[in-house]
Length: 335
Ligand SMILES: C[S@@+](CC[C@H](N)C(=O)[O-])C[C@H]1O[C@@H](n2cnc3c(N)ncnc32)[C@H](O)[C@@H]1O
Image (cartoon, rainbow, N blue to C red):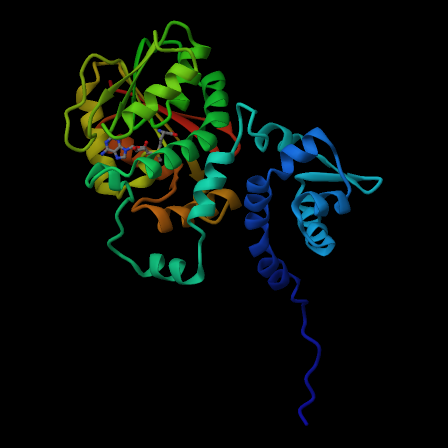
């Protein structure tokens, strides 16, 4: 019999990584059930939650336990209450509701085999099927709502912390739900914003602008940013969560056309998650980098990579403002 000694370190990391597979589905299931709304109105014990959803007690305990250990709930005297993050981001009535992204991701769960295939695929394309094929309105609505829930809180920070003092007319390229443009227009009454979006998405964009009450200062033009020329009557271009979708040569193509369309002294703003130069942190950007491998043909960029892209097409005076967690607003000027 071989005498195997105890290992030199424990296997907690593997257990934790394995168990983390339940975290995100627990969140999406709770959101779909309306658990956060229920607890918002009436903090409840696990047996009340079990009764409400027709669950066995052990199932309610497991769900409430995971959500509490993650920080979405807090337990006092056996009752579960929402934490601040849940009150801000997980109640459908909140302007910061993340429901759009939770719904999109629950419709496209990530399996081992999907990730394996995505990693091996060297000719990935960004999945904007509505740019080329018959638009699937339901998918467009779901995706735009997902992006809105992700971008809106960050957009409010970017609009507040970014220097927009010299901006008068801003073109928001691929502006989706207008989350950035409406936040900027609200914070800076001197700015007019225009969103350039695909014709299939533009009616959605218009609805979001109307809901924000900003139709007088935010409008939409139909256009394919790879095929249609950029208008030349804007002093500023914004790319929010756009470069991360595309291969380097396409990013350069977009930036070059933006540079050519801007007047002398015009500005570009890039709003994206940023990866450390070592590409192994922060954890959320590393995760998002994998998400881009799965979902798009692009990647999360480092500041050096963004600087290199901007300088290659001629931009100067590059500055970086961290605005929201791992997200930065990078700006540069056409000399
Ligand atoms: C990741 S989303 C970003 C949306 C928004 N900028 C934000 O920060 O939330 C990318 C957007 O680019 C738009 N898009 C994709 N391909 C496009 C194209 N060829 N021309 C114009 N817009 C495009 C999509 O419809 C989508 O709204």
